Image (cartoon, rainbow over all chains, first blue to last red; front, side):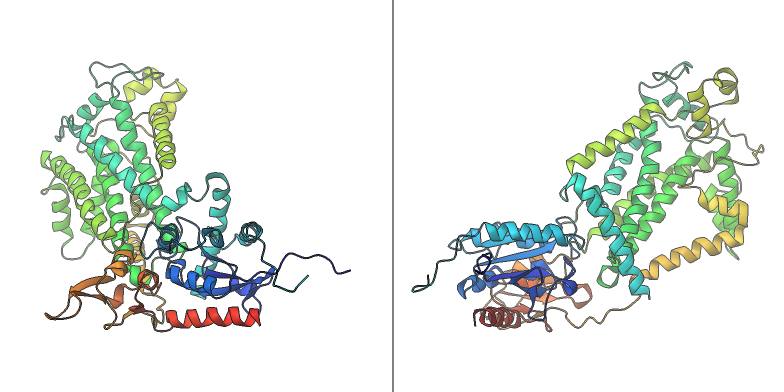
Length: 139
Length: 411
């Protein structure tokens, strides 16, 4: 009998290249080694991410999406992490659309040395997602 | 090699900050307010300096005694009680004195942190170079403060400064005369030192403005927790070891008291200066008097070479090594509506809004000043119209990559 595993997900993460040691965390398909369901789009700064790009990911089949930037107070470009946080919280333009399911949008702000805490936070985020509906006809 | 060094220093800095984050969280980590802390201390000096200025008399006869008057009232635990004095004057002077040490330490830590995290180069040259100027100003501010007390040490420092300036070929004599306000030390000398001390503090406001001019919403205030912690440390230091003047008579009378001995060994000012009666050596304040230590131990020539060389190295640091700079943001003229979002969000004030030609569809257009652009792409994230892009990382490419990842996974 096959071992029961965590349900398959499609998670898209936008990760600042200065926030995490990505060169040691991704496989050739841009998937996280520790969580192959999570694919990463590498960006120069978390502030580079448009909320519409996260909406695009959700609209095209992603179960969830998140942005990961430098620790608050320590953005290499000073304010990128604050900008994306405020955009996703609806406090700064351009804002995340109000019809977007907030439970599917995550934010993590970490330092280069926080790989383990990031993976823990990601696992918690993933665990909080609603179960994926079973496709019709499947047991 | 140099880039590797910078990567290593950054890694070490982040490791140190991570440890502190465990205690303070990143929202209150004092190392994330490293630039705001020196500014906070600078304001502290402005306020305490104004209070001290109210009682200071800048003449050779009265300078020392006026400073002594400020701090002469008995302080709890210290057995000094000459006549006169200002209530808590010694504590206010202590805050000014201990705050000066804290200001230099905080400024150096700020500079080291910026350097170690590689946040001093290229488009950041103006904050860095103005920061070097501020560091030099802090040094002169502290030194001129020591001179105002006009004790034996101040006299020694003035004579050493004159030797230092006289070593400059051609204009040395003029520089020395400019320092003391004439050919010899007179009452005008102390008036001049007071002018240097206060004038320099005023000039520093302009330098702080230059320091901030290319930064959007600079972090100018530490977190409340950091404020209280810092003020607490300074008040404890100033209350435990307030700044006082100590004469030989005072030492003879109270020298057995361990706290008076500790005061005499470090913080207290010396006996009043007498022109013509120069002490052979002084207690050096490591944070402010290292140039004089160099002069006394290595000679004037080496002091000039070391101090001048260090300043020159600091000034050229932001220009080496040069980056490729191929990803400077570009505005798509046809799409820009003049909404100002990119200009408002640019962390380095690199985008300005200019009027379009009369009759244009939109009133304004964003213009990127290439030398200030950090290539971070925050403006790209701010633009709802895809009207500003990084040439080597177009947002359409990002979206295509994103869809490819989803397709590949779904397949």
